[in-house]
Length: 311
Image (tube, rainbow, N blue to C red; front, top):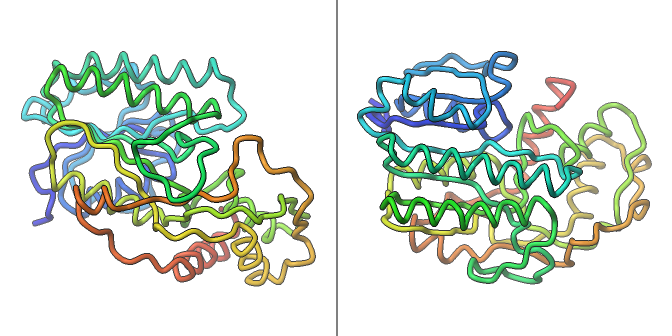
């Protein structure tokens, strides 16, 4: 019997990078899951579902309808909300659309036996703030960071009036096996694999990198340790490292150093020199995450990429 046996979970964004990893873990732990994603019909997870699972394809505005159709929801359920437009090139209006959709979804769900909400924010809520960051100081600049922070406040307003607990996890730089896209680590590995010339900034800024497995573990911890009220919690390793050192590590692993052009790009306007997570509030509310071995986690990511040829 898994540690989440009897838990009913509604998971949005179930086909995304974090969602796939989390879904596998939830099923391994015995949870019953309603997995919702606009990509579900095209991209089912490649693992055996050992638990109870129902897939639904659709926009997050359809979530209340899907919940109504799921008999287990009447026993009460936790919403884990991951779905979002992750394109950093998206406009302010596109990000605002996701804020409005999430708000409408949450307003509808509070009358559907909703017991708890766990949602992901972003370290971009801190904007240009520097140093070891605590949850109470925010200054978002990017459209994505502004949208996520707005969504936090709307969700908090809706859920507190309905006495539904909210855990808002604020991950820093997430990476891991199967990640795709223009983010630093998947971009570096993809370019190393395909033989292309990769262009980077100077890489002298420092960031806090956290493996996707630890993000999933944090969500599981939040599921097992339900807290009343709203809690905003940083999610990182608490240890900064230079972007350059990560790029060089990947370059060395693929013997691709000569194709990695550091200094070819400008640092984005909203990126500060140093950002990493103060994890003291997370440790107080949920307990300590397992120790993070960055190099071992990055080695696993590289190994997975080699074996699958593409990210």
